[in-house]
Structures are given as C-alpha cells and as structure tokens.
Image 1: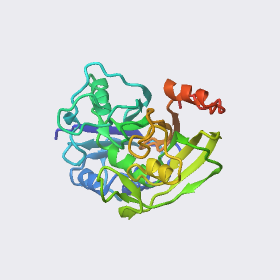
Image 2: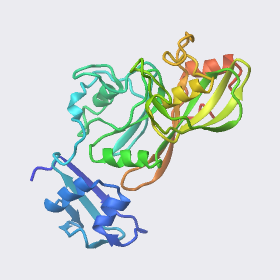
Image 3: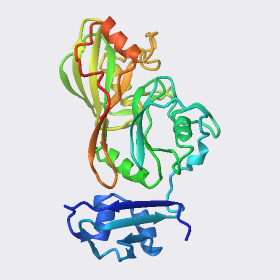
Image 4: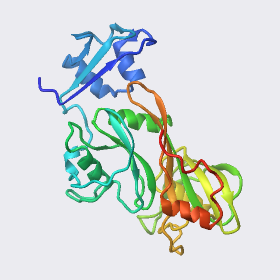
Length: 312
C-alpha cells in the first residue's frame, strides 16, 4: 500500500497503560474516521506489528500511523501557489506544524484558486523543498496581525481544531481602542450577521450565536486604551464587534470604526499551543510590529515592558 503520510511516536516513560483505541481517540484526539481506516487497513503498528484496537499499549512503545491520503477531508494543500520568495516570520516549528507572525494587510488564505500573495502561499513557498505542505487550521482578519497556526500535514488538522474548540489552545490579543476603557471583565453579547450588509456582523444580529470575550485594560488615558483580549468563543469579527458595541471600537478598524483613518491596531499577541501527540503545552509570543509599538509610545500606553518579548 502506498502511504502518503506516516507519523511515528514513542510513548513516554510515564504513559498510562490503556487500549490502543483509547490512546488514539481519547489521548491523541484522532477522529473516528481516521481510526476506522487505521483499523481496516491494519496501518497502525505497535513496535513494528499490527495489534487490534482493544490491545493495550504502554510506556516506550513505538506507534506508527500510516495514511494513504484518502482518509482525510482537509482541502488539498496544492491549491496554494507557493510564493517564490516568501516573507515569513516563523515563531515556532516542529514536525507537524508551525506558528507564524502574520503581518497586517495580508490575507490568511486565497479567496480563489491560484490567488497569490496570501499567508498560505508564503507558507507553501517556505515548505516547498520539504516533504510537507501547508494546511490551514484557523485564520485571522486581513487587517489583524499576529500568531497563526499552520499544519504541515492533514492528520493534525482535526486534532488542532478539536483543541481549539475545546479551549485548550487559545489566543490572546492586544488592541488599542478609542477612549478610556477601565478594569477587566467579560463581553458576552451574542453575535450574528448584519441584516443590511452581509459583510458585517453585529450584536444580536441575524442567527446570533453566543459569544464571550475576556478583557483586561493594561493602560489607558482619555484618548486611547491598550486592552488585552482573550477569545472564549470564535465568532466572526468577535473582538471587533464586541469592542465597538462597548463604545470602545478598535483604532483603525475599517468596518466597525470607519471614522478612524489609521491602520487597525489589533494583534494576535500570545498563543497557548498544545502540541499534537505529545500534548505538551507551549506559550508562543508574537512580537508587536514597530508601528504598534510606536503608537503605544505616542499615546503614552507603553507601560508594560513585557509586551515586546518574543519566543516561546
């Protein structure tokens, strides 16, 4: 059988003894569809041999997962035209994924087949000389900068999506907003589509869904405030809609603060990342762009000396 993707993991020395099925489904979060194909094709090996899903695995066992490619439903990564000279700021990379710092003004992904210049094109170019491809996990808006997770194989995409939906992978943002915002708390207005403009969303709009944002004001004055934000849900334009509805729209937001003529100041600052298979937690920081830093200085908001620290 011709296998397109193979993943080899050696279980840790403190691995709990459990059935292979429980390792794959409960611990590694593989979807049932992938587990089904591993079973019927006998393409999961433990220490070089196929075992049934009910047999037990234990510490230091070597697990080999083999996939032909037809098991996954992730869109074909070949749809992304590789950038010849990708300008990519990689914050973290391992066998399965990378985290990159997307600049403001760049699309996350193409809107039509063959469209160049997006973040996914740059990642495809970055990976062009390897055996990996670029697979989208989540996106951020065109005018938002910051950390974005990109999968390097389609097997980890549903695992990462599950970790995000369960809230185990989460993102913190920094935003500069209009006016003096104070304290900390949560914004919990439901968000739906704007009935007049389908490109906009609004609080209590059409087909509104629950939305929860946590906020903490880091620095403020009468003109501007620097706010730390964390998504508990992932509705479209959630941070932008919630802040605008609160009376403190994001500076430069072209949709929800159209009177502001500056570039939008919303940055995906920190990413709590869970690494698939080993399930180790990492904290990734995307350094602030220079224009963001300069704006904080201009409005006397640069009071937290830890904001510009990068790395993980």
